[in-house]
Length: 152
Image (cartoon, rainbow, N blue to C red; front, side, top):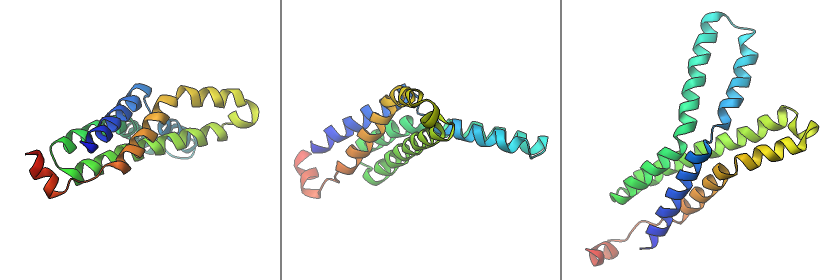
């Protein structure tokens, strides 16, 4: 019973991450791609473009992987479910950190503090989803054998 509320919180966090499209890391990699494209050939630039697309899909998969992890938890595969939830929340956290770093590096902090604040507010659903998921994941407890027998 205790795990149900934490699983629901993880599910809500994953949904919030999907709604806000936590893809901040894509902008960072796009910035790196733009810098590198001036120094590399066309073949390497094409490969970097493909890598950029893959990173975008992984970043989008943060909330989906959390939901998949919760579904696995309902099937009593505790370790695997918690691991997948951790991967999804970690990817979301990394993308939000990279979003903040790129906002600062692009001069938003120095030139336009309001622009940085608006960017943070626009990503607030994703940020709340990541924090909610990380908090709920730490509270998940593996059921003891006695509790499993009593619920059967």
